[in-house]
Image (tube, rainbow, N blue to C red):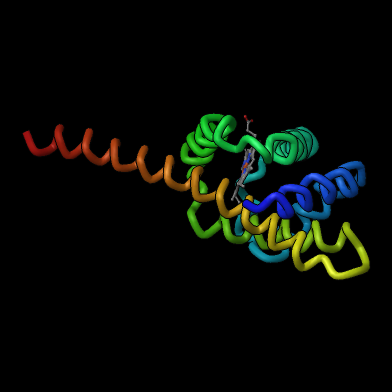
Length: 149
Ligand code: HEM
């Protein structure tokens, strides 16, 4: 990440994070792009929205020290692994979020800002997916050990 990208993330989050409908718009967009993901969200969507918004703020607030929050993101990946979230669903989430951010920023050319968010969301998604792959491999080894004896 360049210092310009870091700056764009911080400034854009400051601009859009107070929009009350931001996360609702994001979920609407996600369910439009990938309606099949709706079934995952059986719990309280308002509570989930709060957690998701908090996490985005947490990421934006720690954008200059991403290495420090790596473990927290990986832990989040483990939660998602248990929820059986599929790898391709991370791309749908990213697409929905980038569109939502672009629309919330409103007007002007947001290309560089969206590229910066794309960068950080790809980084986070990759961390979460890799942890999930690691967990699945561990499980495979465990079961293959049992069944090969
Ligand atoms: C950048 C990627 C993502 C981030 C930052 C993120 C963030 C979060 C957070 C903070 C939670 C709450 C965890 C807790 O309760 O401790 C959560 C839960 C959840 N996430 Fe994600 N998530 C991501 C990707 C996804 C994807 C791709 C899906 C599926 C489309 C998904 C579906 C869910 C579901 C179903 C829950 C549980 C909701 C509930 O408890 O009702 N997430 N996510």
